[in-house]
Length: 275
Image (tube, rainbow, N blue to C red; front, side, top):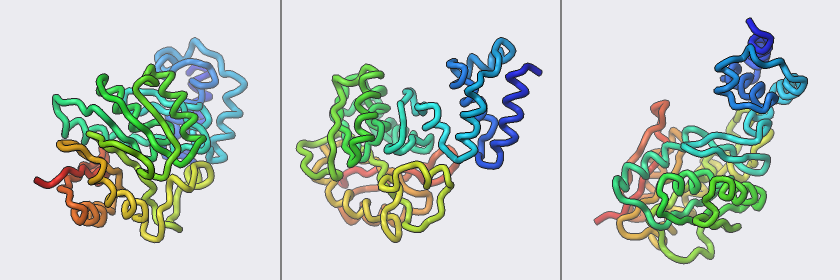
């Protein structure tokens, strides 16, 4: 086995104490230390020597720092997003919202997209990459997150079609939107989380009251005023929240469909106007 292969195996063994994906973490950290893509590393690990920086990166991960913050990016849908402290790290489960939107629009394209709680631009930029004719607005309460979102839009060549602004959900927003995307905080206060999450990611993007529904109660009643005819709002939910959030949506006059993530868990509710 090559020097790099041995180092990866040793690191993965240690990282198993703090990660559900220790081998993947080790590979991403090694690739980052080498300044290459993970695919290139795996194709021929014997061509590389173990860089001194690798040990430091492993120690940071052992302290529960998320890999995405260490390497500075996270791949999501078809795009790569710069991430950092102050912004929620994109999760693969959130790609379910883009899948649900694609199913709804089919061969059509939404013209105007609104992303509530955009973070580093996650859902908005994924949608704009999918629909080249669309424009969009991303709202977030965190200026740190929006700094990342604007940089990501520039890096992806989407800045001309993406606007970002600080806001409290839809307060002060004008106009209507064909597609509204939202991954709000939905974790109940006091719920136990992995140290990677609770120590590093912003609590304001995670927790939403005693039952985790506080932000749905604010957002959903406002959606009818902003959703264009034929459009859809897609909300991320916790895996046990389908019925509770659906009741809020139905009370606001929406028809509701649920889409599950790749793990088979309820993950996205697609809301459309009734009639």
